[in-house]
Image (cartoon, rainbow, N blue to C red; front, top):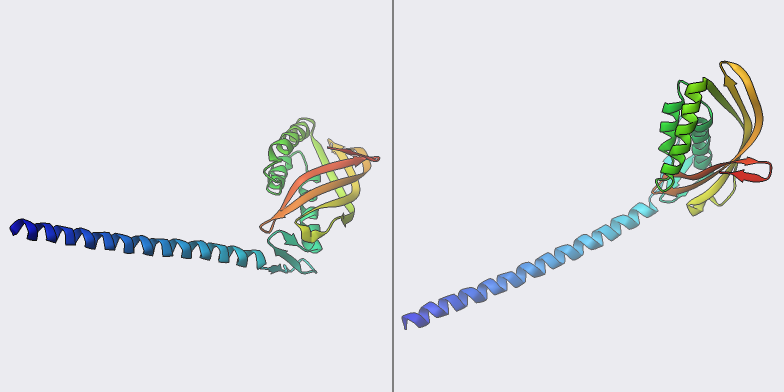
Length: 198
């Protein structure tokens, strides 16, 4: 009789533990499903969210939402990026190129960085200063698609030891994408005649 009581207590205890284990597994499964649904819901909200920025120095509204942005935002970002890339002195070339690289898509950053390092080294060695005067900026493709192309026309001047050595009309094609509201340059090419120089 003592063995039966002892065995029945342990069997009852094991049954209770098995039930508790099932309950805990069920609760964990419900919590996991809740977290997954919450993640999907939050992701959906972030895709639909719009941010409207109107700084005091901009006369137009700028709208960014996920991978979509209006033309004013794209124009502003291209103007700023082109200014960093094409307007520098031999003293500022490194810092301006470093700031420009923050706008470059990581998939092409290494390639663009190498070219910029070569240009910066030449500018420092030869005491080169460059100025770009933007005359026209055209957003070529649908800005709501998340990808596009901008054409920038302007006048480029180069100075060596404060002497003007080159003045030319230039056209640049900037290809970009917008990911999570961030403007990222995927390529920037100078057009010479009808050919695109990469």
